Length: 338
Image (cartoon, rainbow, N blue to C red; front, side, top):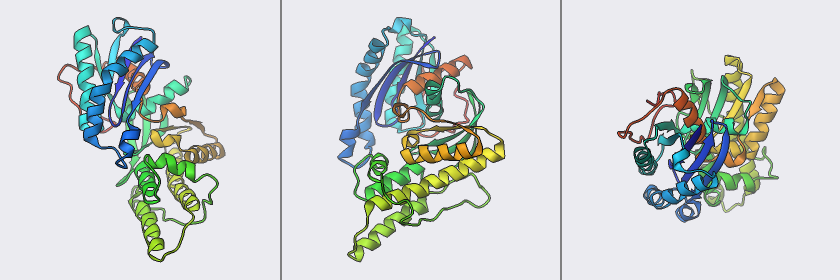
């Protein structure tokens, strides 16, 4: 079965052709990073306009790279939530147009579900159930994946996402956008214990996260140093901040695994590409006898192959949308699509 996946939730216009939810035949991404870098972050209006300009060419290239045509596609899967509403609407409306013109089934896909599904492409042997840490610029969730289409959130951030904290700390340190990526690179060789940061906890919710205070702590440290006319080793600071964020992520994931009896641990989302998180989570799983699954780095960020993968399983579960399909800026991962 061939699924055409379409993704436009933020600043990547993407299309891919995926076979049977596991094999990537093509995966095309038009990135807007260089343009948004001028503003230090994603500008929603610009993102929406660039999606509208790029989407037709991206879809055509995905079909061409896969050596197929729309006549051979069995269904169209599209990200409909969550994300930037204007950006999402471009992908949703384009997908609806293709589905209508070719009389193809239209499958709505939740963005976080598709990030989890990126692991099915990297690890053909992976099957639910498992425990997944979804960590990105906008989300930090601990999810029990009970089946390909059944999810239960057992922990999530109460304020900032881990990726947002990394990005804002990097920006305060003067690193370019995207901050988390550059922070990871610039911190190599730094002393992760040079600076001590707090480990916030949420009373009564041991699996929930809070990164707002941690982010504020590093910003205050930089401001105080500047006001005193002192210098600070940014490599050590970056390494220490990453160590603090990753420690929280690993500790909460390990606690959740012990509580739920999970022995398969999965990473998903853009921050799953972070080298420190991948290394520390591997150490955590190895010391506890758990098996760790992480996506290949090209599949960690937003892409359409993961949409095609999850779309296949949503299709098999009977999920379909009509031409009234809308986009939503927020949507719980547990919510059944349609």
